[in-house]
Length: 148
Image (cartoon, one colour):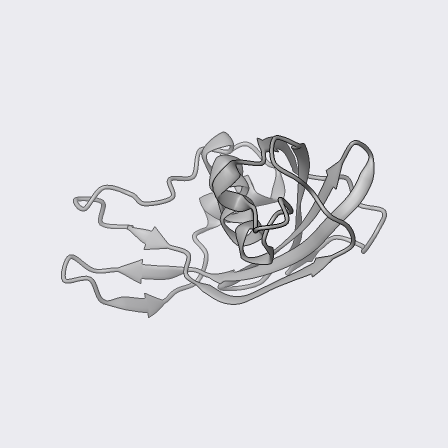
């Protein structure tokens, strides 16, 4: 298992997201539910950046996918339409079959939200069945920051 220490670890990935009108509520503030698609898109961007496919081809015999088993978001302050959010992704824990990502979201240097998602590595069969699986070593190395 690989873990990063809370607070002192550097982000593994940084991204920017502009708040879209669809993300806001009637008061013009980002709706709480909009943070989950934002952190998921940053997770996917991170995975692509380290050479991990979010959804491998159907013909791939080692086809794995990453369903969520836990998601949490805590809110510190508002963000509004057209604000640019800075999203930091941390790989907090890599277990035998799960990965814990932590996110920090800021806007103009002020904290907006923090979140965490836990994903589990699963094999996906051609018939669409999922079964929990150990994280393949090459993927684990990429998540840890080693070249695969």
